Image (cartoon, rainbow, N blue to C red; front, side, top):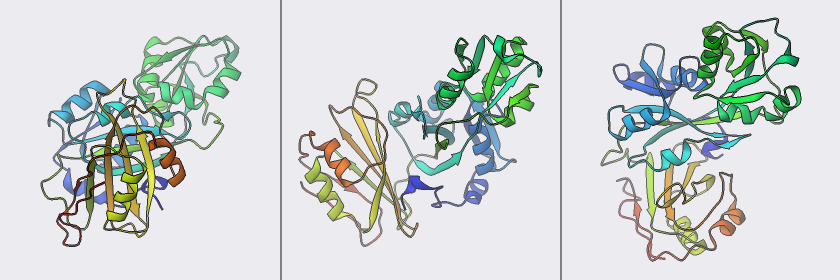
Length: 320
């Protein structure tokens, strides 16, 4: 079972509560957003939680002002979020946990008796609006979409405008927080709506916990390089769970990230691969798909594995 196929069990939720009672934890948006809810569930209500706009949050994390942040990076319906490329561009990226959670969106208004035929504006986060696009397009073909920084920001904005013809697409918990009324509790979607978050922790330690993490950084990769890496891995029966691609137009170097989890959920590792000249999207990948996506990449001259100090993997190196 891959790491991204279910909620990760690499670290129990109590791990965050014990470790961060006195540390500030940052999340995206205002209180009531889905990211706020996930962060509160992971770190506990008594932790110091603070909402930020995306640029401020990622800047604070990259500069070490905040040790822990929670950021959504993928939607099962809309695809990658706007934050993924920014996350992969960070100089330090220590993913403590992947969180997978189904989400729902409510349609809310200032006036509970508003006539839907007269709605002129729909406010929501761009990803949320995309997730419910078919239903919105059918119900409100002429309404203008207004983008908000989070679902809770959308509810706050509509409440502040206090206009009967302006509606919000927002998390159910944000509707009451901002004094709105629910018109549709769970907006229909064309497929199960699941969001994935990364919890980023403090800077990667010099010596990762032996037997827990393995890090691999590769200068470039093609099919042969990947096969060599697979043969060199200290843990067998590993299923590549996710390939992430950020276009080179957004980053100086295109980054591919693979996250895998051994079937017994005891040994997790991440693979960060830098390559050039590819375009693509986030997708689950099997061997054939991987081979097709990377076949055009020039062969790497070397693939250096930086591993934990566990005896069976220390000092491993692959030449391809």
